[in-house]
Image (cartoon, rainbow, N blue to C red; front, side, top):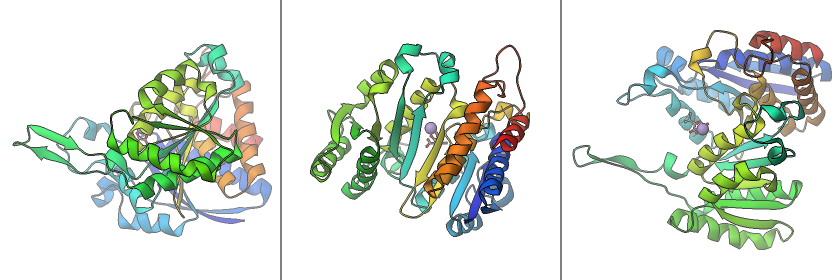
Length: 351
Ligand code: IPM
Ligand code: MN
């Protein structure tokens, strides 16, 4: 297969982790006889510096023309400490999600047997966890009306959803549940929010189309609690943008390191793969960041092209590196930490 992939390294540790995912993907392509063309483009603070905006048109064109986008991370501390900054790196990510129509963010949470005791949660609670969040990504409070009133003394952000936006993410949720254990949890706050009542009502009317799927409806506050108490009771969860943002960070704790969790963002046509962690500026340029979340995001990419063996080859080599202790400092024991680039080289060599 010939693949044309847009490569958006972004900020902070983005370029370093992306380099490793490219190494590993190229090794997979070589082994299985595929050809990958990588087209690099600027995004985030790097794009603000070069082009004055975080998601330039040129970058968008490269993404539109690609079969998929592999993305590193976005964000720079010089903007975080300046609430008055008008142009921010994160806007690039939001604009990209919106312009590419990436409405469904797929965030799996699973455990690695060799890392189970690294999680702050007790082994017996998390063993066997294998759940997937489908976070709505182009609606809700992230994209609603916002502003200031009363000479700036009052601020507002509004959460808006149209039924069709709920239907399309719920459809993905039902379809994914059908492929997995046929359980779907709709996470909302329907006891308080009108937008959540629309979510619940919409999902309820879709239940008849998927009679085999057992649907539960839970409030987001309860899910936040149960997620760390009994994570393996969940399978597929669908939720709106902000709830999904918060719950997926929480869920990443289950695996033992945020540096391990991959994600996919998909729309009708476009597909983007990225680690769920941020740009980790403190580690930028030090060759110490964990590249596995990005490498596993590349595995999700292969999977979505129906290249299942290729995806599995990546997951297998990642498991092997974890068991053999070829890991970066966040996972290292007894001071035996490897560099980001060494982990990437090792993975590519052992594919
Ligand atoms: C994420 C990030 C983004 C989000 C930020 C960087 C805008 O936290 O992908 O989860 O809030 O969606
Ligand atoms: Mn987030």
